Amino acid sequence: MPHPDTGWATCRNRATTVSPHMKVSAKRLPKIVVPKVVIVGRPNVGKSTLFNWIAEKRIAIEDPTAGVTRDRLVQRVEIEGRVFDLIDTGGMGFDDPDGLTAQIDAQIESGLTEAALILFVVDVRSGLLPADREVARRVRRTSTPVVLVANKADDQKFDVHAHDFDELGIGPPLVVSVRQNRNREDLVQSIVEHLPEAWPDELEGAGLPEMKLTIVGRRNVGKSTFVNALAHEERVITSPVAGTTRDSVDVRFEVDGHSFLAIDTPGLRRAKSRKSDIDFYSTHRAQRSIRRADVVLLFFDASEPIGKVDKQLADAVADGSKPVVLVVNKWDLYAGGVKQKEWVEYLRETFRTMPWAPVEFVTATSARNVKAVVDTAQRLFRQSRSRVPTAKLNTILRSAIAANQPPPDTRGRPVRIYYATQVEVAPPTIVLSTSAAKSVSEPYKRYLLAALRKQTPFREVPIKLFVRGRTKEEAAVGD
Image (cartoon, rainbow, N blue to C red; front, side, top):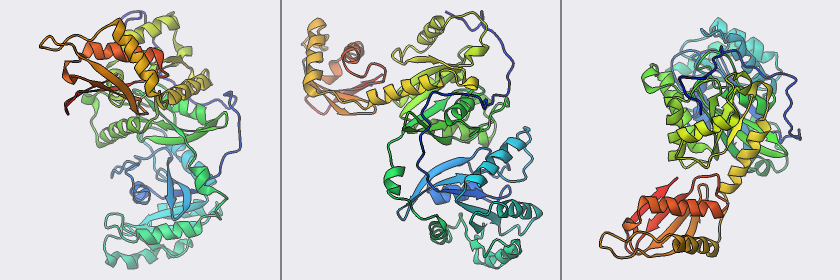
């Protein structure tokens, strides 16, 4: 078994980009086209706040620090029977201190290229600035319908200043205030009116079930590179700069005709290293993305030992009872001579509470084994949503009890287990009816879980087990 202090190869961080020659063995089927409404503007005009306001969810990080948003953030929205993807972008013209200006601008340009409608946001209190003129120049170049949104009109006295932007030639500004919740309905109505004609069965097509894959891990383990491999494009920014990804980014992709949603998350840092509001928000977004997940991909760097942050993430996944694939990335860079079997043993020894979790080895930069990870996640997705008939559960239960009787209660009386039934899926949740719930010991619950896992479809996913007595007393255990 590898040890953090011995036998570990070291490697220099390097920029991770997706090769144009990358091949993922997936059928490239025509995708359902959902209109995209793209929010653009210079830094600090309130684009992310507006994004959250329209979506009615706190998705994008709202912070007065310029340049917080880097990647394109996407939220699927349904309003008045229309479905569209709302997209937030970084501030145009911002000089990123980490040297990511070109990558951020490329994300903005991609958003403009695919937009069915552009929301051009300006700050009515700051007035017309040269940076707004530059945004207008780029927007006009697209020939895409544009709605000019004059934000931060927290008081009606600012409304008259909105006409300062008339000279941009975009059209009359729509005055709003996110803070005061002013004119949201007018903005929403304008968006719906500017959308292209609805395609047949729009709601049905947009509502197809999607498996949500949340990718988590500490900084620089290659999460964003993996997402780009799934999407077959530079969908999220990758670089050797730690903390490049700040928001959780939703990316839709298709494999073998099935639609998926990959959620790229910020790399987490140890609590004592979180020094800014952005670190706090990033951590919160990553934790929330775990709760959203159908399956979690927990990433590790093959050239680095498992650390405290990895263990904290594993605990968060376990607390949420989420199916998880342990993904060892950068396998091509690992020169320590440790075989995959030894890495698996190392993971099993470290994460003893999830011995059922499958392990995959990938090289995200070349998309090696990326498809295998998706296939494994699909398998867990199906397992977590399976139902076992009550009759079969009770056959398994009787066999387990016959082989190993539950210990007696504190008074020496036998504990009777009457029956088991599955009450929920995702995660599979099983209720045991007993004569004395509190007398069913934790080791015996684990024994029953092992028996259930061996003979049900739930072999690689967590199971929740609730034990109920004759009264309202109840004990619970999950793994």
